[in-house]
Length: 105
Image (tube, rainbow, N blue to C red; front, side):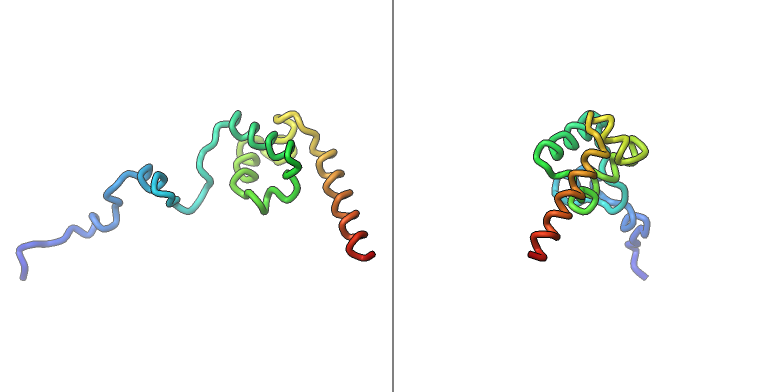
């Protein structure tokens, strides 16, 4: 037998802190990173100003998930950002309908 033994727990525990993984661009699986409510609301406003609220749950799922966790629903997050959820949905439906109509023509 060898005099040197390896500690099995050493291989299970990371040797560097979690924040160093983030600095290198890697991220652990699971919940999105924490985001302050004011930062989240500003990002929602920015997306709305550029017309990118449609299908945000597919394009930027971390933003959508964080908004739902902080405000309970996407509609409440839009209301907190000063936006009208009903108007946003209506505009998206209108654009989708027009796009389908153009595709058929």
